[in-house]
Image (cartoon, rainbow, N blue to C red; front, top):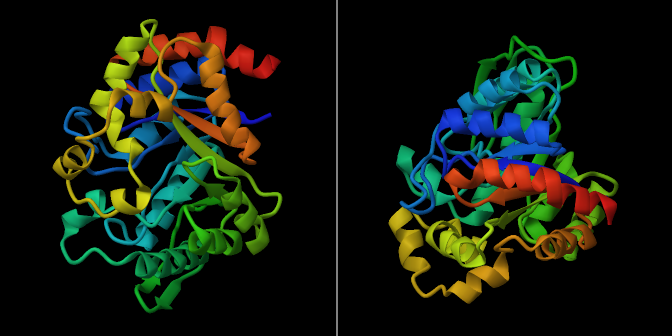
Length: 321
């Protein structure tokens, strides 16, 4: 059975609420939790974007057994991979071994803030591959000096290292990223229930490894309210990731999603209180070979209601079927 996770969505809630909500999710019986790592929200209506790593540290102390994971961190622009290696090692220590480092090639939305040009996707994949090499080298211990095509590391050392380093997940969307993940990742990450992604991951060396998906949902007792909320905050999600990765600011996502209709949103993500509709959407990922699926409940002010509903209705129904 696919394990069901809870998403701390930094783009729609402040840091104290995110920590409170993940503690509630642990109590409710979610199997794991993930956190987004952005500098901007996708749309102004979401209204937040606290620093994910501070939230993670607090979440590690506010919970005691739920696994935690970045979904995902980009280690190629805003963060240097040597810094990512240090903070991921620290998170593994703070969480007593509950942390997974999810990595991806990034979005212009979050990485443009440091200036310079946004690399084309092929270059970003090269950078991500080097970043993983650097992170793993630092986790092995000792002093690391690295001279790559895209990165340099000069006499670096991570002093506080866990006995077991965090597993590394890599986000995939096509053949190139699947090949990279198969070679270098302990976990595959994807946001679309496409069986061919898992197949390509397996062929490149990922057979038998976990694959973690994510789905947006909009629970509400009133289906129309649920759709309206999803339209307001998550209509950008109906776009293509190859396009989304290139857009620079929330206004770009707003403009790109102007023609999205209510029915587009409600078709793409389950909206309302119908447990069977939510289960059907979750089963699409399960049927595509995903071992884990993180749920994103849309709307900061609906998290407690969603978690309560999931604990009493959704999770029991999933585990009984």
